[in-house]
Length: 561
Picture 1 (cartoon, rainbow, N blue to C red):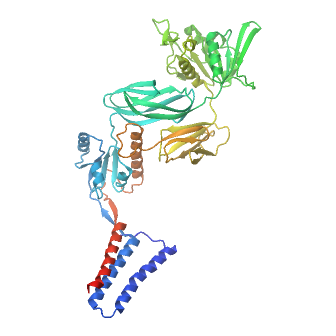
Picture 2 (picture 1 turned 90 degrees about the vertical axis):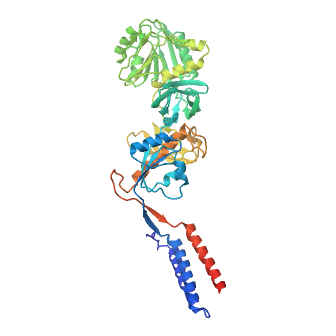
Picture 3 (picture 1 turned 120 degrees about the vertical axis):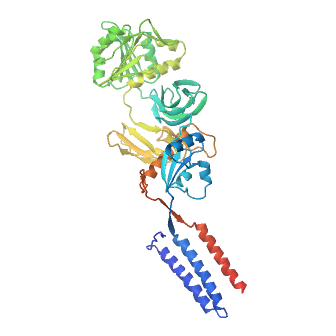
């Protein structure tokens, strides 16, 4: 038996010790001085007072003792794990005893074994806490149609690609769709069993955005994030004679708030210039838009030498023009003709030349469009699209915007004051924040009602990071213009959830098991014979009940004589 140590440095401990000593001595002294009371009655009263004193002493000292757990193994299965699967798993592990979570919740005592094999992840924090003294080994159970992992960016810029990736288990496969409103922005066909998925699209909306992730007709959950406005570009068109295609592109870029300079050279020494959203600076353009005939222009060369981006459009013979621009721009792009075709239909109003870009190291494809981006000191993009202005003429401005935002996304310069948040953000779980390329030295980051201290990243001197935990769910403001969405726990007794709540539950059990193994002081290797013990103690209500019974007995005893 052990007694928790007392702190004799505080006066309260000395005061309680004196009161307990008085409680022991004074009643015995008074009973001994009573006249007319037989010796047997005095002995009974002294015994009752001694028992009362021991009960009060026990309430104060809280004595504990160790109880050895019997060696043995138990499979503790979540309620949503099929019984056949539990039996098969137990047989493969050589464990004879199994128990469901509902049976475990009804137990009033500690689990009578020293090793518990958790099967599944639907266990509450209170249930896991009851396994603190056992060796715990966890095997998750992949429920069909339930998300196992999922991640995306909590903050993106407009025009940037948002990617939702993860892992899911399906019994018969199905179509996994990512929807913006009623429109499917990306989808993938799943096969049976557990597999990874990756869905992405170009973010064309601003502000708080939400997508739905659905498996066939079942909505798994809602993906929420914030889209920041894209930084404005300085764009220079270097062309001999801008046609309707380039003028439509220049007009759209100007409508997006970018500074555009379009020069039209009519003849030698004669030309016109169109400027949209003119800037007061004479800095090099962030993006130069040109064609194969002008890739040797000195403006293009200066832009690439300064690390800027170049977009080459209006190709007519890619098999001849691409090798020429490779020599001029020092790129390594390749094209292959698609036999038997004169044009490629991307959509009813969008066509492309019958060529494709084979994979080349250092080249990034633009998903959904025949555009390749060569990454070097600057970035060079080559488009095989023909006349994209047909989308605007047909009234499909959304498709036109999505097209050019997708093409421009990899050509944008590195933004300033970029905040990266790994989503999903789960309540009571650590969340990592990263601020990159800040315009001013940051010190704090306001998130909801909390203030996080930013520290310089150990690797990148232009990056600052912090970690926080949040108790409240819903949209939480970040600084003055951003926000993040914190996903809370599913209420008790709610219907089964196959979305983020299932992912959060799996992470909760995984975190508990990792911490349990970290602080487990007893060896857990196979064949270990070290006996595991649990610490037992009489609860406070037991001591109080004993004190009440003894006081009642002391009150009744004099009346019996």
